[in-house]
Image (cartoon, rainbow, N blue to C red; front, side, top):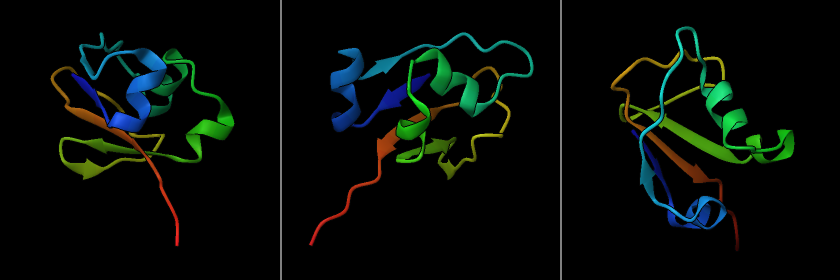
Length: 74
């Protein structure tokens, strides 16, 4: 299951959806399948089962993924 923060929901027009995991798929493979650019990937924070994940982390069936965008301001 993949959940998107409100600021990413606009890109896919949905907030929560299921994602079929292929054996050996990584977090980066998920972002690629969602058509995020290399530039986008630099600003997307990924949580896997409640813990921060790296692009190289492997995904497994039943993982809960949360995507959000790094936001700054002052």
